[in-house]
Amino acid sequence: MTDRMIVGNNPLPSNPTPLSAPQEQQVRDLYYKNVRAKCAPEIETFASCALGRTFTMIYACRDARLAMNSCMLQYQNQDELDKARQEWFALAGERKKAREEHQRKLEEARTKHKEWWNLDEQGRTVGKRAEHVNEAGLARREENRVDDRGVTRGGIYRGT
Image 1 (cartoon, rainbow, N blue to C red):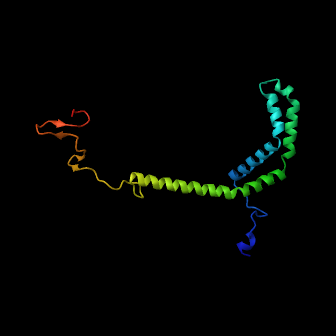
Image 2 (cartoon, one colour; image 1 turned 120 degrees about the vertical axis):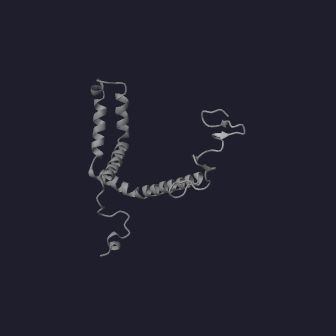
Image 3 (spheres, rainbow, N blue to C red; image 1 turned 135 degrees about the vertical axis):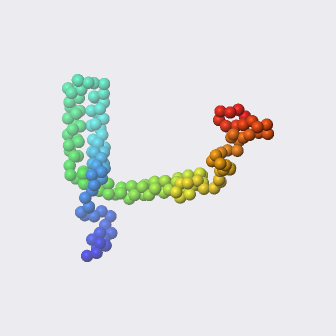
C-alpha cells in the first residue's frame, strides 16, 4: 500500500498521529475554553456573587458554586475533548498560513534592513570607503589637523 492510499484525501485521519506535549496542551486549552463558554452564565453568576467577599464567599455563594461545578462536570468528558482535538486539527491550516506569513514578513524586514544599511549577505557594510587612511590608521579629515601656523586643530579635547 502506498502512502496515498493510506492517507487519501481525508481532511482528518481516523487515527491521527500522536500529538506532542505542547500540541496536547493547546488541545486542552481549546477544551477548557469550550467548556467555559458553555457554562458562561453559571460562571458569571458565581463571579458576581463572590465579588467583594472573602471568607463569607464559601457560605454565601454555595449554590452558585455547586451549579457552576455541576455544569462544568457535565461538559468535561471524552466527547468534548475529541471535539477540541478535531477543532485543533481544523485550525492547523490557519496556523501554518500564519507561520508562513510571519516568515515572509521577517524575510522582507531583513531585506529592507540590508538595503537601508547597504549590507551584503554576511552583514558587512558595502560601498563607500573611509575618507582617507594615514599612518595613524583611519581618521577623519578634520581631526588633528595642523593649520598653516603649525597649530593642531580639531579632535575631541582640542579646540577648533
